Image (cartoon, rainbow, N blue to C red; front, side):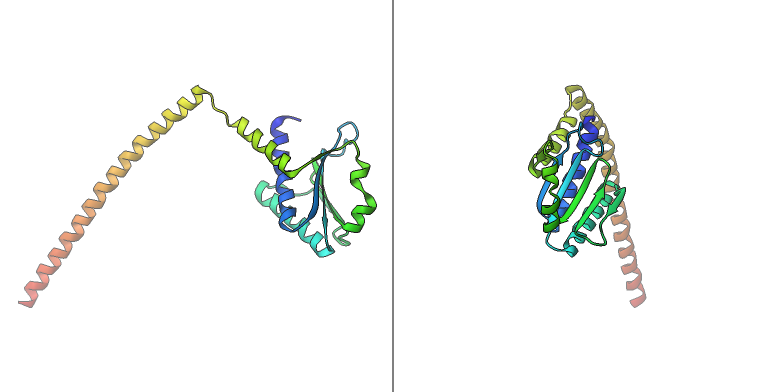
Length: 190
């Protein structure tokens, strides 16, 4: 997987996990699946809710946040009706929201022994590192940016000076109108 796609995927996972945390999901785990064993997907995001209603709220929040922030919708969602185990398929990763009983019964973590468990902090640090490395500037790039900013600043300074002149002219006209109005009023009162 190329680094850009992997960074984007990690951002999606991080946002999905954060959405689950916001809805008080418990025991959030991210499993990086072994590619030799799973041609289905790259990651599992697994979490637990305390009730069917909370499971629905968690999945709704994950779906809403990923759609709003990244424009991504799940390919399919299964299990909403019973809400004991809701599965959201985002192709590159699958979100599993379990009730505590169903999670203990099915034990996905036990079934995927070769999977690597990623912590949310580790995932976020990798995303930040990938973003930072993508933003590194060479001296030549920095010089071009500085020159471009300087060129953009000159027209801005000229525009600001023109605005100041226009404001003074408008203020002068307003003062002249008031003075003319006062004179006219004095004449009519005499």
